[in-house]
Image (cartoon, rainbow, N blue to C red):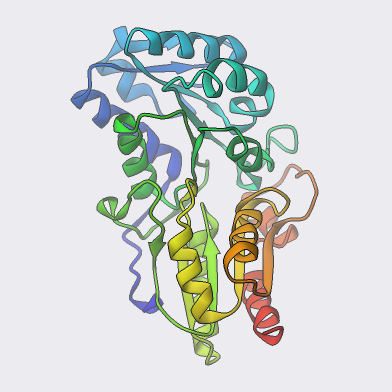
Length: 317
């Protein structure tokens, strides 16, 4: 089944956001875009050209941007804030908690350049804690799409979703292998149905998990691969159904294994069906400057790391 997944192109997920917000804005006049001096990096040029009156340049003042966005919702606007993931979360956590999450404001926090694949900007920009930070906020929806198509679909879907949202995507050109109409907020995407091991992945590592699954199948190990693009609300039913069958799991994410997708899967398993789990992610560390793929390799987030984790967890059954 994994061999049937077709790559239809290669494009950065942030371009999916840029194309998605433009298309959503054409349908909904209440959508406005805010940025903190990163319009080009967040691919907002098309939106700005078509809707200049609905664009707010906040400058390098991310906390102020969050406050402005919260205020805009009072008048019925649907604000999309845009900057790098580190500056969308860590730098402005108090403003998000108090003015957006606690107040229940319909703000869409859209964050690019997440994780190690940001690359050369290094550890100060490569936030690896943001999924954990944001999923812990009451009422916050957290989405980590896998490719260009899914990011575009998610960007459009959240416009009609009445909730504060954290949408996490990235910088590098990446394989496109999903279909836009496959995305539903809160509904896990099943990429294969098998019985030996479940791999749960999100973001860029979904494709790495596809590659790993193909290698494992060549070794005679059948892989059930599930894309958990919505970290919160979590599709508990899909997770429990899968692990009840396979009896073991691997989680893969471009994020610290403390507090991310892996913790969400483990908590679900502990409550419903305790199983052995292995985690692929960064291990309680910051990143560093480097080429994106070289960083994934150094920090153990590559295809072969997922393969090894699957073999290890099967041996623990």
